[in-house]
Structure formats: structure tokens, C-alpha cells
Image 1 (cartoon, rainbow, N blue to C red):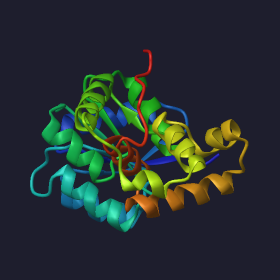
Image 2 (spheres, one colour):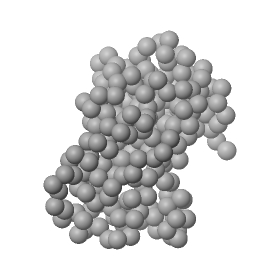
Image 3 (cartoon, one colour):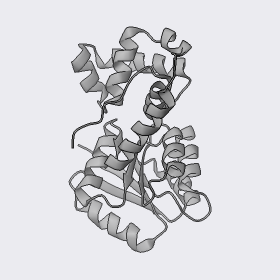
Image 4 (cartoon, rainbow, N blue to C red):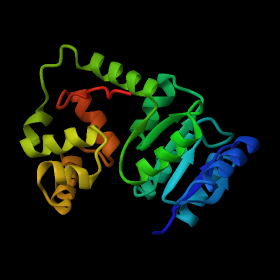
Length: 222
């Protein structure tokens, strides 16, 4: 099996070097490049085509947010995992809306970072527990008094089931097994969901669906 190709984007050399050493010890991971700022991250993502980009938020010049937007617009297949010291709303929500596939705090342990990389590579969404709490509270508050959406009429019952499974962090294969569908059928449902909701990523679809009250997200037990 080919290793997961990883690009690191972090402006602090010592942090970047430590992260690389950690990841190179893990089975099935290969760090193929390092970027010290957002501009370099965009350029290396274009030239190296990593499977997963581990991205800091605050970097000189182009920020992690703008870099994520540009990379996702050009190469939506590249998974972007945010690794940040910041958990404030002004960082978290814009990055998730920009298409980030995960948001992990730098307080995470080494094995949690490795697991998160493998998870986003397989199509799952990863959030640090405190980030999950923040997202749930934010979206729940936005749903108060919501009387429904025209979007609800556009999605079929099966599409809602698929979307709910995506929100639970399930991969396409897990969704297929759970709903007794083929993986190809799941992919077709996802394309239809993206088109109806006007989004381009799983994270955006879940965020939109939660905001519109189409699905509810249950907090996982740790």
C-alpha cells in the first residue's frame, strides 16, 4: 500500500521539524514537503499534490485560511487538516466553511495527530473535542426558532440519511454498508446533495445541513 503523502505548512521551524520527525516514525505516512508560509503551501500543494496538508492558521503573508480556500478551489481532493493553537470562533468557522477537513489543536498528542491524518485521508472529518462542542453549540443556537427550509424539500429521504451518516464521520464504504447501498450509489447521492445545497465539500454540506435544521448532530462519547 502506498504511504499517505503529507505536506506540512508551519512557520515555526522547530514545530515543523518536530512534527515531521513524529510523522516519519508512523507507519504508512510520508512527509513529502514543508512550507513556512501560506504562499509556499499553495505552491507546494500545486506541484507535489499531497494526499493530506497539515496546515497552521496564522502564518506570515498568506494565512492558513486563504491558503485553504485557494487549495480547495483548485484541488478539492487534497485533504486539509488544520493544526492550530487557536480555538476561537473567528478561526474555526471560516476554516471549516473554506473546506478544511479537520481542525486539531496543538495540545493533541502525537498519536492523535497520526490518527487524524489517517482519518481525513479516508474521508472522515476530525475535530478536537472542544472544537466539536463549539460547533454544536453554534449551530444549535442558529437553529432556534427555525421553521424549516426549502432545502429540506429538495433532499430526498435517502439523501438525508446519507448526509446524517456523513455528519457522524462515516466513510463512503461505511455509509454503503450501513444503508445497504453500493459505494458508487453513495457517491451519486453525495454529488446530488452537494448540488442541491450549493456546496463543494462534505464539511460544507454538514455545516449547511445543521444550520438549516435538516439534520442534528449528536456528540460522540469520548
